[in-house]
Structure formats: structure tokens, C-alpha cells
Picture 1 (cartoon, rainbow over the protein chains, first blue to last red):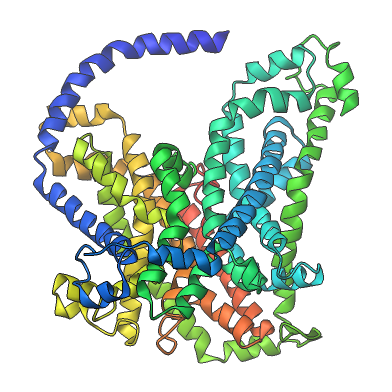
Picture 2 (cartoon, helix red, strand yellow):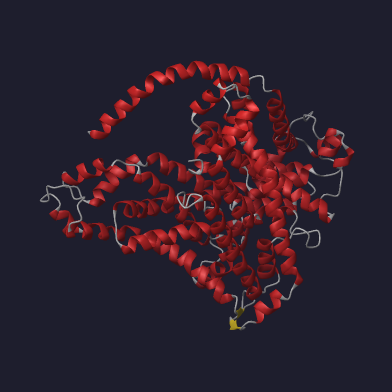
Length: 301
Length: 312
């Protein structure tokens, strides 16, 4: 009740200055529009970003003859999809599936258990919870790549070497510290009154977690899921060290071996780069805002 | 837990007061952390301890593990390769910071502007974020081909160098490609930071007749203090883990000219099958990472704990 009141007065209060501010802001943006050095710099950076991307796209559509014969930056005279076909025939559908399994298999449990832990850290108290929270925060500062050798040893001892599960388990652990940090910051923002009113209705903490905290935290959950998802999808070191069979390759690893095997066929190699990025590109086109906010995972807060 | 639940309806007063029951109930929530704690202990804390232990062991990655005492430490510390890797790690860290920070900051301010074309450019600026390090490295390798790459395409012969074959060129290339891949991420962070600066500050400055450049130095830059610290922390701690990109792009070469610590660890452990010495390098990595994170956190003040520490 009190929060509702506070909000509405805040809005009413902010209403009129914002209105007059809009006019000055218009003036300012008109002035800024004339910022020529900034514009120039912006276009130069665009060239730096876009030329490599453009090169990858057009080269992946060229035939071998086109690649050797044409100007490298010219559009293909006879665009072809044969490179893509070749990449797909090199078992890329399989690698794609592997990447999808590892990403979903790691991110879904990681987010779920991190959410539960965050809820407990925010709602609970006591020495144990403080200790757990402190440990997760420490985990943020440690370059977890440095633990790869003991992880390799453990995975061998657990008889998990050369399996997708070997990639999933450490990925879950690596994702926990940041996920807990972001989710607990978010749960902390839920007004205490909401929790209390559910408490008074006789709900257990377990029910409060699923019925109140989870729905209210959904935007943050999407954010951390995207952030972790991209990291796992693009991860290279774990698959490099923990798998061996060609059938278990995930996309980044497949890219690497593919460019080793087909180093003479650059258009095909670049087609493999394109294909491995395609799902994320689709995500970018469909939900750019969400993807970008997921990428910075609350760093810009 | 169930005990706490059954008593809940009977307590009519808000349970915020420190009654014994509510303290018990709040401590009982600890159970919810058990799954996360389990994974974190088994696959992060235990390996972290393991890396210290393995630094005193002899292991070839396949056979039995034996004790090696201080041998690994002595041999690694006496190896000039370590100092080469350390130097390169810090060189790339500092160079990356110097290159990326001004560009990201300016681009962040630029893309936070209200002009339409800037928003459109921003959509394209963020494309490198979608690519894996392996993809970026492979794309640049193709792009730098002296005959069929950018040099011929743009007609700029000075681009036709043996980028991966000459030590200082390879190093410069690594720094450039890292910037290409990571500037978009930091631009995004700065864009978010700029958008949170209160508009009223600029309005006041405008009334005082301050121009764009003055506004940048007197409002934007000071207001971005915490953003700069966050971004710098991520850059610096993150630079310890540029492994994938450099591994695919140069493999540490030519010679050892781009063999940073993380790569050195991998090559010693998984190529030379010397897991003990590789673990020594890993310990050094952990110590540097922790020291840097703490140092930068000190710089940033204690209030923004945690959010700046992440660097993975």
C-alpha cells in the first residue's frame, strides 16, 4: 500500500519538470546533430567492424574459383550455397545438436539452482548463508580457466571423459557466482511488503519462492540465461580439453578442426563460421534488446 | 522447514521482528543453497584446491600421480618461458586497456546519443558480440591472407604482411583482434552508464553555455567513474582468459611471441604432458586474478562490491 502511494506521488512530482526538459533536450540533440568529428569517428569504426563481417559473408558464398579469381571484397559473380552444403555434410548438424544440448543442459540447471540459492541468500539469514554468499562472491574474482587441470583429472576419475556431461557439469559450476549475484540483487529489489503479505496468507517460503519471487524475477532470469547461454555456446577450452571423439564436438571446436582440415578451402571454412553464428544472429534479429541486456548481465547498472 | 510453515498462520504480527522462530525459519532457508553449493564446491572449489596440490605433484596426464615436492616450482621459476609469458600477459593486458578504453568510452557516448543514425550504427557495432572467439580468429586469419584477403581487396599493399609469421606483427595483431572482439561489449557497458547520467546536469551546463567538449570532460567523464572502473576490471581480469582467441589465431607463435600465461599453462599441461609445472602456472594465474580484482575493487570503493569482480 505504502509503496503504491510513494510511486504515484513520485510520478506526479516528476511529471512537470520532465515536460519542460523535453524541450531543452530537443534543442540539445539538434546541436549535437552537428557533431561532425563524432559522426566521422562513428563511420570509421563502422568500417572496421563491418568489413571483416562483410568479407566473411561474401566469401562464404563464393566458389573456389571466385575466391581465387575475384577481388576479395567484390560481390560473388555466381553466388553459391555449395560451401554451406559441404559444411552441413561434414556433420555440422551433429555439432549443432551437441552445442544445443550442452548449452541447455548447463544453463537451465545453473539458473534454477542459482535462483534458489539467491532467494535463500536474500530472504534468509544466519552464518551459513553469509558464508555461502561470500564464497560465491569470491568465485567471481577467480579465473576459473585456471582450474582446468584438476577438472580434467576429476572428469577422468568420474569416468566422464569424452562425454557431453563432462562439459555440462563444470559449466554449471562456473555459471553460479555471477548468476547468484545478479539474481540476488534483483530479488532484493522486490518490496518486502509483498513477501510479508504472502507470509500472512500462510504461504511457506517454498511457495513464496515459486509463486512470488520467480514471476517477479523473470526479466533477470532471461538476462542471466542469455549471458550464460552465450558463454557456454561459444566456450572453447572445456570441449578442447574434456572431449576427444569427433562425434562429440561442439561448434567452436568443430570450427577449429574444420579449418585445420580444410585450410585450402577458405570459402567453406567461412561458411562454417557463418553457420555456427547463425542461431545467435537469429536471436539478435528477433530479440536484440533482450540479447544485449543479457550480454552485459547488469554490469551497466 | 515444515515446522516453520505450520506456525506461520498463527503468528499474526509481521515476522520481521527478531523472534526466535523467524530466525530459525530464516536459517532453514539455507537448504535452498545446497544444490548450487554442491556444484560450486565440487567443480570450482575442489579444483581450485586441486590446482595447488597438483603444483607439487608429478603427472603426465595419463599415468599415476606422484609427489614432486618443490621440483615443479623450482623448474618453472627458473624457466625464462615463465617470464616471457608473464611479460606478454601484462603487455597484452595494458595494451588492450589502452586501446579499448578510449574507443569504448567514446563509442558508448556516441551510441547513447539520440540521433537515429547512431542507433542504426549501434546495431551493427554489436555484431562481433555474437561470434565465438574461434570464429573471430578464423575469420581474421582468412582476412589477413596477403593474396586473397583485405590487402588485395582494398588495394593497400602495406596490409600484405606476414602477420602471423613476424613476432611483433603477431603481437600487434592479437591486440587488434582482441579489441575488435571486445570493444563492442565495453561500448555496451559505457552506453548503459551514459544513459544513467541525469539529463538535468547537461541542461544546467547548456544554460551556462558549456559546449559539447566541455560537457564531455566536466559531466560525462566524472559521472562515468564507476562505469570506467567496472569496465576496466572486466577488461583487466578478463585479459587473463584470452586463451581461445590467441590459441586459434596464433597458437602462441611465432616462436613464443604470443604465448600468454593461460596458453602457456595449456601447452605445458596438455601438449607437453607436464601437468605439475602447468599447475604452477595455473596457481600464478589464480593469484594474479585475485590480486588484480582486489586492487581494482579498492580503487573503486567498497560500496559497489561484487558487480565489478566478474571477469570470466
